[in-house]
Image 1 (cartoon, helix red, strand yellow):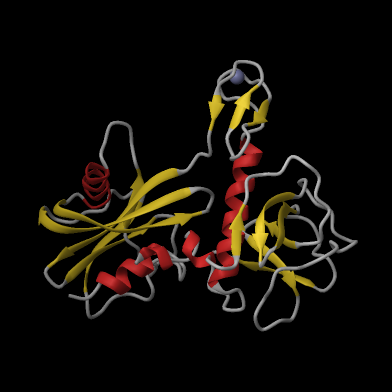
Image 2 (image 1 turned 135 degrees about the vertical axis):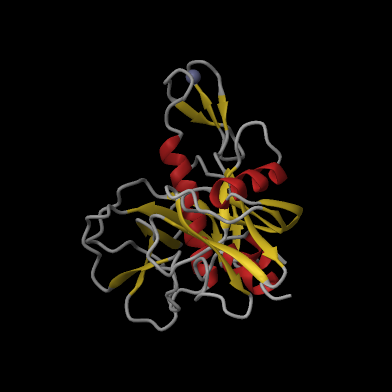
Length: 282
Ligand SMILES: [Zn+2]
């Protein structure tokens, strides 16, 4: 089940209880999810990283107010950011939570992702996108209401399809222009106005590789907090056309034999990798 993927809530079951933001001050000691870019600050030198607990390091300068996002092992968990240019506090290191660092297990990567996604929304929901007025919290959730025009705004989570296309024993992988040579992944893209998820799959495959697909079936989904996508995974079968990359967004579109795939398509914690492992062999 895709529930067990990193960044999905099930990864945190038994460890984390989400809470909507508290209005009243709470000074109980707790854990910290301190982010610098897409890295999580942890005590230095541990084989298995853990969240910092208790008082914040004295030499740390938070860029944002601490935000209580839930309970971690029964204690308050507060999230905040430090600037990308800040020196790390003494005896701490910052581990990238999207990437493959094995000292940061999937549960810590997932809680860091949750904190990142919430803080991304908080930073971008201070003012109303309709009238520019200040926003205030709607109780019991992460939604906001404009104090000027009354518009209500809810967290922006962007749906994005990702699809493994099969032709017999061959699988379609693409390389985007921004990726290093040799790095391939699955066709993926954002849902557009006026289309179903299946239509989005057909359009993205057409745009990125100029082929037609059919028999589109859903296999699973993943929260992808970089910064706030919902990845919706599909399989599809080839129908017609010669693969041809668009040459702009996609520079290579290649049929790979399922027995000779390139190294780890997608990141270690991504649904691309999971789809390949689950469905990449006949
Ligand atoms: Zn407004």
